Image (cartoon, rainbow, N blue to C red):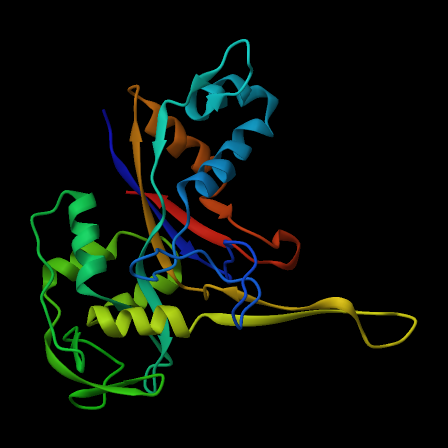
Length: 272
């Protein structure tokens, strides 16, 4: 049986919502209950992937094997096991180098566990940051992310950098070694919870020239250049290979989540 990781790198902002909210944002993104990290539910990923096969009559039977058959006369579970998309690296504004990708010990330890690597992420204090030797985002020993100044503690180890390099084929990821930073779990949670994009949506009443009644709402989006990954497993040999071939036929590009007609949710994907 084969297990691979599907990496999901957002080319445009992404909205996978959790429904309406009574908070300041009308349509927030779905998050983990305990960490508040944004996620992509496995059901959302399965639906997007299944559509690639269901929309092609020639691959319909293959799609039933991969994702299951809902026909009451021949119901069956899918032979491809799809995990939820977990957050690994998140872009934040940086006073130097334009922006940085941040990750944290919790996200790294999850990634190492799911990848089967015998590594353990280093621990650090809330005001500390780890950077690569070739970083371009530091002022001496300090970095400024959003409104926070953090102090460099040590260099990111080569084995962590190497484990990140092959995850994404997108050309923007080539600058990852110069822009990657490891921050504390607390700082990571703060940034991923408070620095997503908030888009305001309105509809104008053509007759009155003002916002139509009930047509003003705000929507939270995960920003471009965010990296998620999901574990792909199989109940039958060869299913992950079939998935990989199907993704290659789509140029390793998927649209995930809401607002396809306004350009949201386009992602570069790769099985590693």
